[in-house]
Image (cartoon, rainbow, N blue to C red):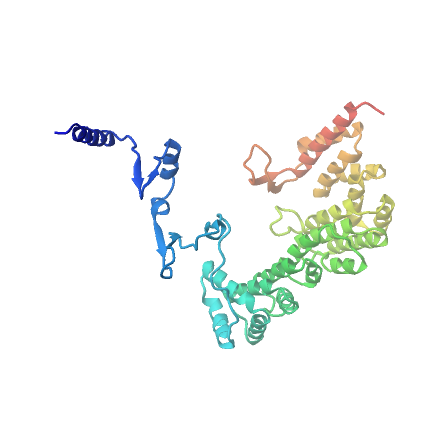
Length: 432
């Protein structure tokens, strides 16, 4: 056998053995060498989908043209930005944008609103109907005028009106929020109110004409911190009476007191004084207020009005003048506000209130006032209150109780303890 044949066979056998051992060989394809992958390349290959790594589709080409490879994901090839997948959180737009519906199709879509499942189905309906613009708004208005649709239909309709956000859609939302389309159904009204304020925050002031606390609370929260002029003060005054709702009255007092200055601020103080007199004169003033932990009607509303007087942008003399025009518990509430504002001229009045056996929460409010105007000689009285005052109210329990736990609390004792700590701390500070 010729020597070179022997060498050729030896090389073939060696190649088979080496390949079986897993060692990479030089392979040729079409006459061009393909360099074996290194370790990093193999790791990358393992992390890549085999289909994405190897599958290629040859797109049809005209006769005589070079075949063009098309990526397996269906892209057109060429610019990578056209074929790369969208990052997570940025879904690709629908291949078919919702076009203009015919009147019959729009009517059919509106008919379906009340029968859709909340979630994907209602989302798709909103996405399809919002681009219909005024046509969808008109259809909604007509249906509201004809009948009172069910909650599901109305909720989805509110979303559509919010999405359109035109002058006409806001007018419908405004009417819905004010009960003109529902006969005052608070759950329905509040959806429209929230959507309207999302479209135009200035609409919150218009919503203050609503009689529904469910609408007034979010509207008052939306206008918090905004300037209050005479026109806005008139709207806030309508929210202040104790016959409205304690949450509404509290927010109204805070908004008008914080946002007003000058003559408007003095008018706001007078309005709060009138509200204090009204609740003090109410026959129910000393009866328990519902869900207030045992507090009376006057305590629930009076405490809210005091919070407004605390931040009113007027000098102390304006409150003294107000106290001079009031009587009884209404006057006492203004004096408490002066004490908590740091006016030491009402010190003796606070000593008297703190010892009033009929004062109930006024003892707690007066004790808290001592934290601002208290003196070392007040400590014996405060220590007695902290140990023996019998007033009990249901309220949030302090640590180490779990957060949100409720139970019997002693508001006078707690206020007296806070005042004691404050007075003792002040006494230890060097005098200026």
